[in-house]
Image (cartoon, rainbow over all chains, first blue to last red; front, top):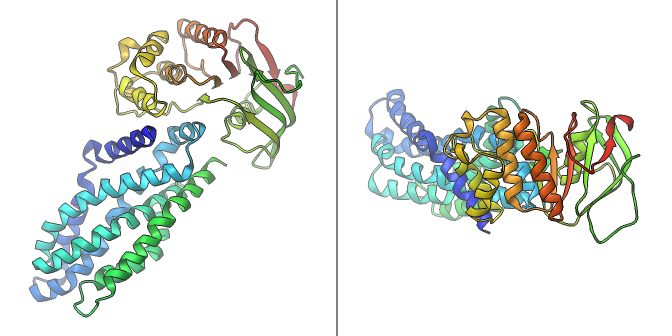
Length: 215
Length: 203
């Protein structure tokens, strides 16, 4: 158990080391800044469409660090050393998912505030967005670690990783953005259900992918 | 074959029984049996591509044998071509991560660091270390882990004479403490009482 905790802190330290903490934040804010330029400074239009844009940006922010989630550990032999010590691949995947969820989820929630301001979201919508993102972050982290594990052997893996992850993330986009619609009352529960499903499947699927990397 | 397969013995730490290994679509070896008892050391020799590293990975459980069985009775410490140390960290902190994973205390790491003469480099980032120094650092991890079975894949690569002597000393101490060593190396190390398995002769 102490070993897994040590692994968690190491992953978190690597996620936030060398300024990487600000990458999803910067990316997220970049999208929020660029979007009003693209659709024009029409506040009601921004308020109506901005929430969906925030969800898209959050999904892409989860995919940003795919390249350094698994591949460096594989190349440095860290995964082999862990396997030799008898850790289950599923446990390692679960730790990596937790570390990624916190590593990118926390900065994302902080960045939500300025991004919402840029996209003319009112307080109630910001609350809904924050709640939805908190629910979705574990699933987004699961998908990111899964596609990182699947593409760790490929050059330019992150591009393919994005393609892999997109269909699986679509339900969360639909229900997450659907929560912003005053008529969409069931969206929260459906978002939670799809997030739970992906979060539960994630460690097993990513663990199997890690096992496959050794063959 | 020079590694004598014999009857199972309680002191056996590692047993490979008639294993075969296929990489890609090439058969590297088959019908290979070997045992490592406490105090044993076995040198896998042979040219590049003979399957030394694959055999080490089979013994470590990182590869599945295409046929045969691999049995490990004790914990394993492995050195391969990757040092598995975080390059951005000072050496001591990078090793301390593995010490936490292996739940060994700081004194054990201190002793292993001085055994490989790395105490002076504790604050140097891993990225600044030379190849030989990284091999010594990986050796520190192996020594500190306290695992009875050592699987060493080319541990002396890049090591100078003094470091090789320290490696040989560490192996001798490990064996006298009841450990076993499986060593893959394309050149000879001055290790006394060493069994040999010529992988080149198998192909």
